[in-house]
Length: 404
Image (cartoon, rainbow, N blue to C red; front, top):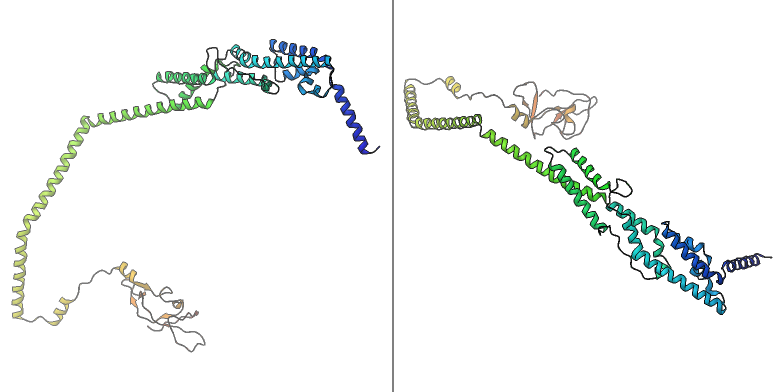
């Protein structure tokens, strides 16, 4: 037997086993009744879990075959066909009724029976019911029309309404707790936040401290704290202004202000008096200076008539007055004889032969006026030249003063 024949035999065996696994159609009415009882008992005992419908079908094979369509390719007699139609109609009618009853009524009743009081418990119970009865939204149940009743609390609130009511309760709790405190820090405020959230979470069905959308409660807390901080800042500013006003209106401060004004007035009057005195003396001083000049010229004329001033005395009188040298100006316009004075490193070993200027104070130092160009003299063993141009870039080791 080759591989192809082996595969054909295996397929025939599997096909035969599959056909053998299909229960007889005569078993279908009983399995449909068993399936209905399984569903009803599970629901009545509150044991419904995800996959309950699939388990009830598995315990009644004929219903599973009806679901999978295994009987579609089987040839029935007239009696068997009647059994098939009867069982199939009963199974479909039950599934339709089951979907309609659960979605439109039973789930909402179970939700209200949980008696949720917080939006956190609301969301938990609703998600649990939707997960447990998820098969009602799968085929073949999804083929049948049904309208799901919305989940509401015993007082008729939806999840959004209950959540908004909790946020309002939380905000009122914070305002009531903070208005009674004269001094409130951020740490004290956070303690009040914990207490106000505890007033809500204590009603959770599972006894946890969970909150539905906790970021919404955090946002409300931040808004309330921002208002409190603004009020505290305004109160501090009002207190500071009041204290400043009281200090400004106090007697010591008033005395200081009056003394300052008096002192300023005295300074102004003194300045005006000095200016008036200077202006008053200006006309009297001018003729005096003129008379002195005329008297001096008259005396000089008399002296010229009597004798002639010796030349030495005239030279002495015409000699300019010596002034203290301005070293800053000299330093800006002159450079000391060095390599910075001459280009191409000439001053490193070559003596400057250009125009030189002595330092006003340090007479021994030789300076060159900025911008002056000259020659350099050097002495080098074996070199016949005694002069070198200023722009020649010769580097030597010996240095000799050229006598300048």
